[in-house]
Image 1: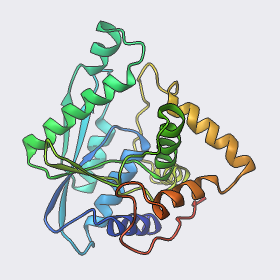
Image 2 (image 1 turned 90 degrees about the vertical axis):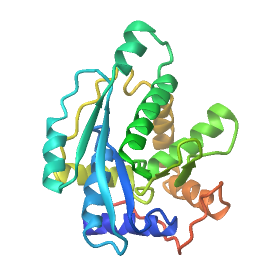
Image 3 (image 1 turned 30 degrees about the vertical axis):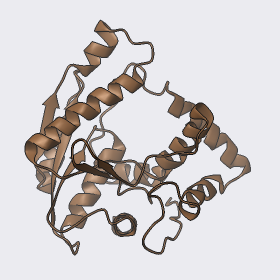
Image 4 (image 1 turned 30 degrees about the horizontal axis):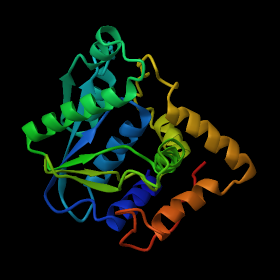
Amino acid sequence: MQKLMGLMRRCIEDYDMIQEGDRIAVGVSGGKDSLVLLKLLAGLRSYYNKSFTLEAITIDMGLGMDYSGIEELCRSLDVPYTIVRTQIGPIIFDYRKEKNPCSMCSKMRRGALNEAILERGFNKLALGHHYDDAVETFVMSLIFEGRISCFQPVTNLDRTGIIQIRPMLYIHEKTADNFAQRMNLPVIRNRCPVDKQTKREEVKTLIYDLTRTYPDLKDKIFGAMQRYPLPEWEPHGRYKRPKEQE
């Protein structure tokens, strides 16, 4: 845990993600990445040199998922927890019967989350995107959109005033998986009807196949995003490539 908090702290400082007195909402879907983010931020909170507060927020899609394990985890971490009940799932899959539901689902979840954050007076939203997510998003933009792009480590949402931060960008997916298992985090099975059937899964498989021939492919892509920086990707601190933890 100390090693992962060290990687997270370096990422936070490289991109100046947290300031004194920040009120940070942690977007918790119930998947491993968001739970690892919550666990690490709660641990970092106790000794970081800038004080900040946390609250976990879940947007319930209306798909019958049980969040009692997350409620118990939040109690153990002394982090307030809010579940926002919605009918996004039934609207998309039962009423509209969307053939390509991911884009609309993302917009509706984002809208519900931003509204909940503004109601509670938070100024920042922490998301659980990790190292592999960044590489995959870059490749997806290149293949499917014909442009060089990726989400930003820190994103200012002008219309709401919320700042999105992604503190896990130096942590590999495999490392997060292992940590979630060792900590016995209450990961919830995704009940989305199109889970594992998305374009992201196609790209994940493509990158996996390529790395068997070019083992350092992901490192080179991630490094290129910082050395020849995409907007807001040049780190302020001295970046050292994060090594994948077994």
